[in-house]
Amino acid sequence: MTVNAQPWSLLETASDRDWESGTALGRVLDLWCDSLGVRAAAVFVEGRDGWELVQGSRAARFEPVLAGGADLLQLPGRFRLAVDSEQPLRQPPDAPIALLLSAAARLHRLHERLKEQEFAENYKVVTLEAVYDVGLAVASTLDLEQLCEEILLRAVSLLDARRGAFYLADGGSYTLRGTIGGEARPSLPHDDPGMQSLEPGAGTERCGLDLLPGARFPLTVAIAYKGQTKGLLAVADKESRTGVGPFSEADRRALELFATQAAIALENANLHRQALEKERLEREMQLAAEIQRGILPTTMPSTSALEIVGWNRPTRQVGGDYYGSISLDGGALGVVVADVTGKGMPAALLVSTLHSALHLLLEKREPNADLLATLNQHIAESSSSNKFITLILVDVDPLADALGYLNAGHNPGLVIRSDGSVDQLPASGLPLGLLRTASYQYRRVPFVPGDLVCLYSDGITECTSPADEEFGEGRLIEFLRERRTEPLSNIVQELDEAVTRYAAGQPQGDDQTVVLLRRT
Amino acid sequence: MTDSLKLKVDRRDGVAVIYTDGYINNQGGEEIAKVAYQLVDEGYKSLLLNLAGTKIVNSIGISILIEIIERMLEVEGRLAFCNLTPTIDKTFHIMGLAQYSSIFPDESSAVEQLS
Image (cartoon, rainbow over all chains, first blue to last red; front, side, top):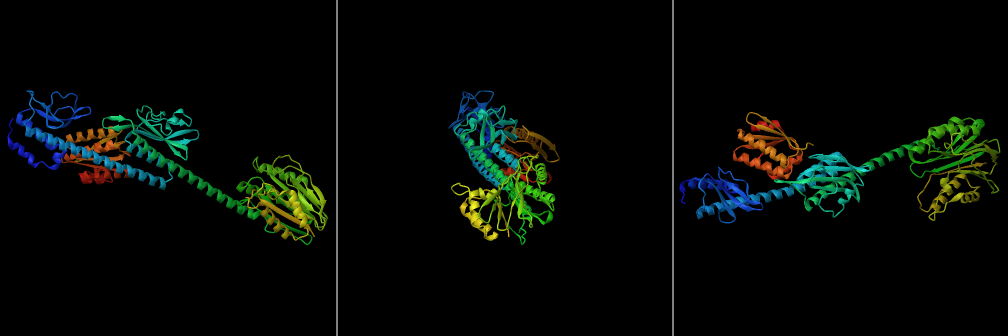
């Protein structure tokens, strides 16, 4: 078969792009078809599923893949030629034409392969950039909804998944927070048997969790931080140009990478919440401390007949101990030490309530059991059921050699006599606020010059040593007996030092309060 | 998010605008290609893809968009994009789509250039 050379000279103007794209190969086929008078022709190469079309002439009507190859004409290399003509052709083209067709086909295919490789390389860069961008987003925002959507979008697109879903732990289940490409199961209980398929080494075979109904090739990974599963990231059906298929082990690792980013984001948000809560609590404590500072006295009133010194060391910024003095009827003075259950703002508020109520009920009045019962009712009504107050009140008349006392569940006051003997001022009723109908007894004991009275909170006697032994009432009594003639300020300071030495670095477990009175 | 890509076409003087709503994956990409090639057959040489409704494109979708760009170049036409999310914009630049097509921030500037 000879061909007219003139039209072939048109190939001299074909550009590199024409040869690479297959356009020039198409022109060669056109020229050859014209020269032989056949309708159309196409070059095929042997592929996995049969003979795959490389390029056809302008009138080509060939299927992209031919199952059989019997009617294909031989070309150099792995290429074959299909011809659409009225008369079947049995001979392949002349050698020069055959070589040209084969070479052009080879160039086109090499170029296509190069394009695919370039595409794959560029997509790796896209993947790296996505991981970088997600990392930046995790570090810069605490908006969990936005982060969840971002991570889901990236995971689905980079894995070429057709569908995806994002779940977060919520109580006893994982709740759906976002979905792409179709419906997803609204929630999954924590103890679903399918969760076992998320164990390391479970592989990419069919996941035991049916999170994306109808999905043929699901893949789910846990969003876990320090061994705790905080959510689930699910994708399904990896796309290709011919359909969908399973994900690879590399895909699983990529998905786990995104899940790790999500876990970090969740932990960041959790830590931020905790920090905000801590900040709120600290502000609350500061406020409570200010309230308490305004209530506790800076000094206690002393007269020529009565010395009083008070001392308080709260265990935290604000405590539940209270002490103070109240002017009573007839020039008498009431001295109070109280201990409120709990710490922080709730205790501070209750202390404030107690302070106001004490002054309202007792100011310029004579203390008695009924007044304490009224105070008890008020505290019971204004505090929560788990809050109560122990309290000891002594009232001292400067003209009398006795003192009266009321003790609502508080540790007994101590009276150290000048001869070293000790009397106690024990409780005569329940703590305030415990039982609305509680009753109390008002009692009196001698209080003469030289007598030392000590009212204290259990933070002193319950202070523990490194050997876990309490300071105890006995040790306190002995301490006071030995120092009963010293100035009260010295006794308080020495008691502070003694308790601190006794604790030997142990953290202070409770507020510590001491009020000393001496008849002079 | 919608299950499959939805398209809307606005044929104007000199340029046809294709609005996408949803995921540009294999199915979505094929839908866009079908509409684009039909518009080319109708004689349009300038096509604008408005991706305001699309937050996600996968590699299959990108390869189909590249094929559309190549087809437009063959007919001496051009394909442009507008309203890309920052992520998609970055992806298109890395994958080379920006080299052979035009990317605009919004539809009005795109139409002005293409008309």
